[in-house]
Amino acid sequence: MKVSLVALSLAVAFSARADDTNTTVKSLTIQECIERALANNLDIKLERINPSIESWGVVRQQAAYDPILSGQVNYEDSTQPLNPQNATALGITSLKSKQLVSDAGLSGKLPPGTQYGLTYSDARFSGTIASNFVYTGTAALSLSQPILRNFGFGANSALIRVARKSRDIAVQNFTLQVMTTIRDVSTAYYELVFAIEDHKAKLEDLTLAQQLLDETRRRVQVGVSSPLDVTQAEAGVAAREQALILAERLIKDNENKLKRLISQNVGEFQGQSFVPADYPVVEMVETDTTQSIRTALQVRPDYVAAKQFVEQQNILVKYNRNQLWPEVDLQGSYGYNARGDNGFSSYNDNLARGDNPVWTVGVTASFPLGNRQARANYRVARLNAETALLNLKKLEQQIIVDVDNAVGHVQTNLKSVEAARASNRLARESLDAEKKKLIAGASTTFLVLQAQSQLATAQSAEIRARADYSESLVTLWHTDGTTLQKHNIVLDENF
Image 1 (spheres, one colour):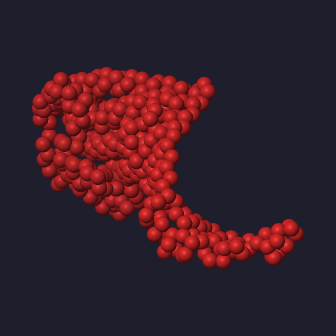
Image 2 (cartoon, rainbow, N blue to C red):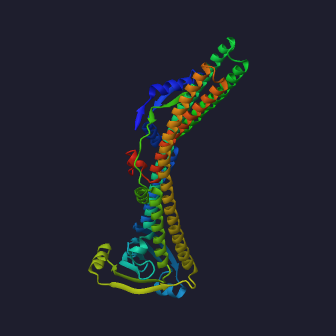
Image 3 (cartoon, rainbow, N blue to C red):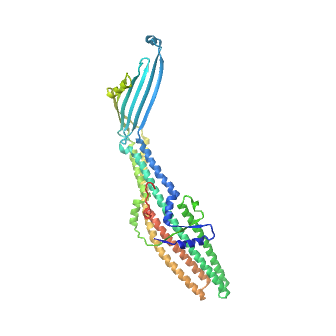
């Protein structure tokens, strides 16, 4: 599908930039341009960040199951005065006490919604009445299980699944940006090919017009033609010089567009001009509208992302429906109390024996009167899900139309190329015939100029048709979602 025309393109490029002696010419294949774009395009770099952001969003939601370790230590030294009666009876004027309290705990949440807590606390105190240290404490396990709102794996993993869908959508958006950039690079590349080839055709047209002007001047000198013929020939040369100037500008514009797409710093190409090394060869490509539509609805990133968004909204609908229920939690705890009057070791022995168990069981319930916030969230979630589904259907219809149009453009542009080739051939034959008639005195300079103009138009039309055909293939691949496959590009998590 590719033919190297580097030598020819270089010649054209040098002629188009003859006035800029500081310009160097750089030859690039379309694959090199795509690789540069994938590595340097700023739009791709920006979109590449979003999947990482959404991945951390998943981690943020998973943090709901992270256990929490807590603890504290408090020391208290207290002196309390006694009333005169107690002071006289006890023989002291005040009570002194010292107390060191410490506790630690581990709490968290399990996927079914179960809240758990492991707690341990002990207190060591001494004072006027208890001269030796006395230890007291408790070790317990507590559980709280929702039985309506926030019950089960579905409700408690909903936000994690929503975050995962957001990450998957971001990956699809990144893939779409890569495909869009490849399409834009390919289109810009073929537009640059068109501009250079069109410049070449206009340069040839100018050369023919200049030759005609020289020939007409000689014919005026020998009295075969009139001065009016010279004027017409000069006007033809001037018009073609203007067209050539515009063609040179078009080359520069398309070149700058390609530079912007394949670089994150356009300044690095300062003083360089691009010359395409690959020339699009027009060959018939088999097209199947039905198959292309089927493929697009399977692999197109925007359609896949739209389906994932619908799934995400359905998760939120189920989650918000669960939030309509009253909050009813079954709670229970079991532990041991302990005391040690002869030091910490006796306290530990008492706690280990489990002679003093303590347990609780109960139910707590709460229900906001009116519950308007939960009802509003549920209704909004349902409307969002309905909107997402309608947008999916809308996108599906648009894909069907776009693919059908893209296939049609490929077929039409292929026929257009054949017609343009025939028109170009006939225009050249017409010009040759008109030039022979001029030599024989049966034609005029005006008619030859007209024939030259028709040839230039036909040449530009053929060049345009070839570029349009190549670009229509690029558009078809983008529309049916096969751009990456056509260029053998595989995206992974580290791309």
